[in-house]
Amino acid sequence: MATPTKTADRARPTYFPQLAAERLDIALCRASAAVARAADARAGEEGLGVGQHLVLQMLDAVGPCSQQTLSEELRIDRSVMVSVCDDLEQEGLVRRERNPRDRRSYAVTITDAGRRRLAQAQTSIPAFLEDTFQPLTPDERDQLSTLLGKLLKIDT
Amino acid sequence: MATPTKTADRARPTYFPQLAAERLDIALCRASAAVARAADARAGEEGLGVGQHLVLQMLDAVGPCSQQTLSEELRIDRSVMVSVCDDLEQEGLVRRERNPRDRRSYAVTITDAGRRRLAQAQTSIPAFLEDTFQPLTPDERDQLSTLLGKLLKIDT
DNA sequence: CGCAGATTGTTTGACAGCAGATGATTTGCA
DNA sequence: TGCAAATCATCTGCTGTCAAACAATCTGCG
Image 1 (cartoon, each protein chain N blue to C red):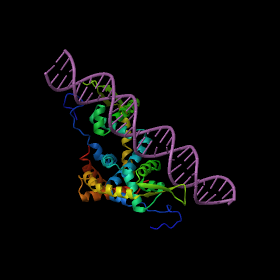
Image 2: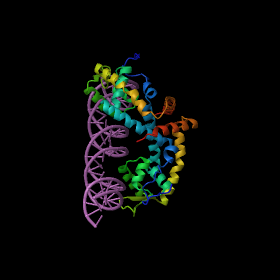
Image 3: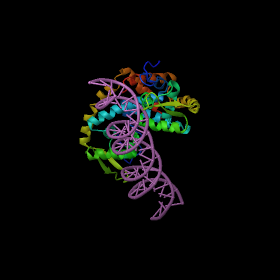
Image 4: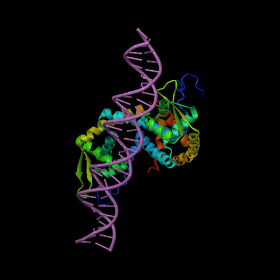
């Protein structure tokens, strides 16, 4: 494309179509970045980080866990899990007790305050998802979910 | 599932199904992380980073650009673009000349060596995409591409 | 012209994510 | 039993990303 305007750079709404169209990997990364940004923003407003939310959610669902287990199931690095649990403990949302059968590990337990906080945070999720995935119809969201599920089958 | 073994934590293949299933945002982030990891690995083998590849691709397609333009079109932070262009220039794949009409900006230009390197790098992309998206059929990849396209319409 | 404000490229500082090392503890095996 | 190897939580250092500050330059408006 020749540049019709005077300055070589300016005034070219090219928007480089090839990338998002041709390279599925790049489109995926861009979409993920946009969504992650939105999630962080919402989590920031709410005062409960995404990782902390996930930990509370899992503890509530499956009962006390070691940090190791939380790490593996939630795909959060175990050294990051340390600070996530630190924050949660400091706010009184979880307790860290030594596991008597294996004193190397903790039994991380959600507290009543944690359950209340979780319930409160859960209520904002549907609206968040609705906002973020607004360009897609419910059917399309299901499609996307299915496709990502297949893609993640091989996740390391 | 009850835990058959003695220790409370061990041997529970729970795998916390709710997350990837219910929360589309998390599934998207996981898939993106896996794909980005694969892309980085391939780029590492090839010696040409993902960002550098994109810059060469765009310069080849639309001609000389300022770093600012490259930044915006490729969604790479402009402070990151500095080092990307530094590396490319050091390897002789691009030239950085001052734009005579606006001496604040550069006119970044791809060199012949850059074009050769780009052509060589391009050949490995189909195989990479094939490997990475192997769990999806061609039809499903098209679906995914379309869905992501719609989702990115609102990208900030 | 002359100056306030915007823009371009760059540097700096903060921060998340990850690999590797460490100390405490448990497990496996001779 | 005793000891080597594995495991859990933690800490440290490195890398990549991003926001904010900065100097040089351009633009718009009097």
